[in-house]
Image (cartoon, rainbow, N blue to C red; front, side, top):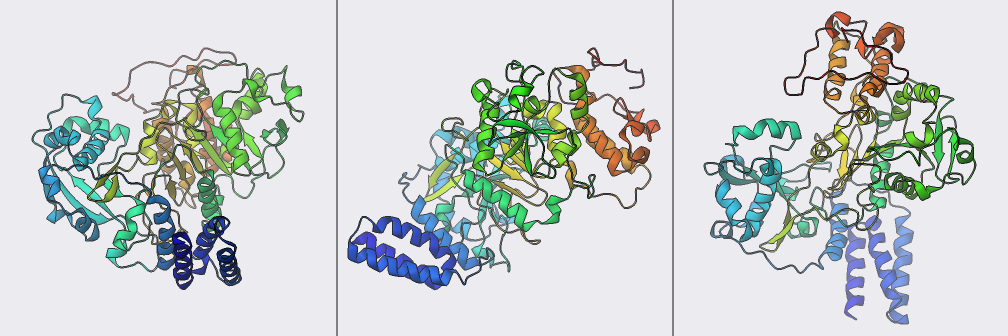
Length: 584
C-alpha cells in the first residue's frame, strides 16, 4: 500500500511539473504495478494512458529548470539507497557547516583556514574531509613522486563557488551547482615542472554528488555521478547523439578535407555484422580505433595468406584476437554502428606497398571517422577496454559522507587521464588523436567523450544541449586536436611554420618501437598541413621531405634539441628506408 501511495503521489507531482519526464516515473510505476493488485493496476494504467496522450504534444527541452528538478526526483529515488554513516571529522572540520558553504558563494577572499597541508595529510586516517583533501592534493601535486617534500609551511583554506551552468536563462546563483575549492597558494616550486608535464589541475576541488542536489533545491546538473563497475553504453550513445544533433556542421566539417569526404577506393574496413574485411562503401559512416600494439605477436594480423579468407562473411574469427580488438568490435555493435577501421586487420601487414598506401591516407581515415575509440587504459592490445566488461577496471572514485552530504574528489579530466597513460607516450597515437573529430577515451579512471564543442564523462552530470553561454568544469580540459583549426582565409608570413612547430613539437617527445617510423607516424599531420595551407600547391610530396617543411626550410632548419630529453639520433634502418640527410 505504501508503494502505491508513493507511486500515485509521484505521478501527480510530476504531471504538474513536466509531462516529458513523467514517462520515466510512469515506466517505473508500470513495472511495480504488476505485483500489486488488479484494482490498483487499473488505476495506474489509466494514469499512464493520460500521460502518454499528453506526452505526444510536448516537445523535449533540456533548458527548462523544472525539467531538471523532476529528473532529480527520479535520480534521488534511485540513489538514496546508500546508508553509509557519516565519516568522523577532526576538530577543525567539525566546526564547518558544509551545507551552508555549498549553499552560498564563499569567495576566495573570505576563505576559511584549514591548517597546513602536512597536518591535513596526517589526519587523513581520522577525518573524512581531510581524507578527501589529501586525496586531491596527492594526485594533483604528484606526491608519490616527491615523498620527501616539505609541506609543513603550506597552508590550506576553503572556499566555494558555482562551477558553471547548462541552462538558459541562467538561474539565480543559489540554484547553481557549487563545488568546494581548496586553495593552497604556496605550492612547492619543486613540483611545478612535474605538474606541468602531467597536465594536472592547479585547482583543487571537491564535488557534491547528484543524490544530494535536491537538498539545495537544485537540479543534478554538474554534480558528481557514481561510476559503476561497467560503463553505461546508453550514456555513451547519448553523448554522440547530443553532438550530432546539437553541434551541426561544427563537428561534422573537417577543414583540410573540404567538401570531398569520399573515402579512398583502396580503403578496407571491418564489417562487425558480417565479420569480414570489406571494401569501404562510399561515404559510409565508420568508427576508427587507436590503441597500443605493445609488442604483441602477429597471429591476429591480416596478411597475404589469410586476406582472402577474411574477406568472406564470417571470415574474421575472433578466437585469436586480443581483448582490445574484441571489446572494440563489441562496443561498435552495442552503439548500433556497423563499420570499424583497425590498422592490423584492414592493412595487409606483410605487403610493403599496401602499408605505404594506407599510411599516407591516415589523415583521411581518422579525419573522416564518425568517432574514434581510444584504448588508453592498458599497455598493449591484450588489455581490455576498461569498464566495457565487468571486473575490467578497479574503482577509482573516492566518496565520503560528511555531515550527511556525499562528497567526492572529481576524477581526472581527459587531458590529465591521458597523460597518465602509456598510450600517450607512443608516437603513432599522436596523429590519431589530433585528427579525429569525436573521441571516446577508455582510461583506467573512466570513459570520456570529447568533440569540438563539448566534453562529457561518467563522473559529472554535464549532458545538455550545447548553448553558447553554457559553462562546465571540463569545458577546457580536453586533449585538444588539430580539427579545431579552420581553413585559413589568409595566411600571414610564418603562420604555416608556426602550425608545423605546434604539430611536430609534442610528437618528437614520444616513443616508437621502430625508430625508422618517425616520418611515417606523422605523415598524416604533414599531409594536413600541405592540404590545409596549400603548401606546394597542396601536394605533400612537394612540401615535405623527411618530415621537414620545404616551403619554410630556412625556419625548419633551425630546430633545437629539447634539453629535457636524451640527446640521441634516431635509427633509420629498415626495409624500404632511404638514408637521412644531415640537415634532417
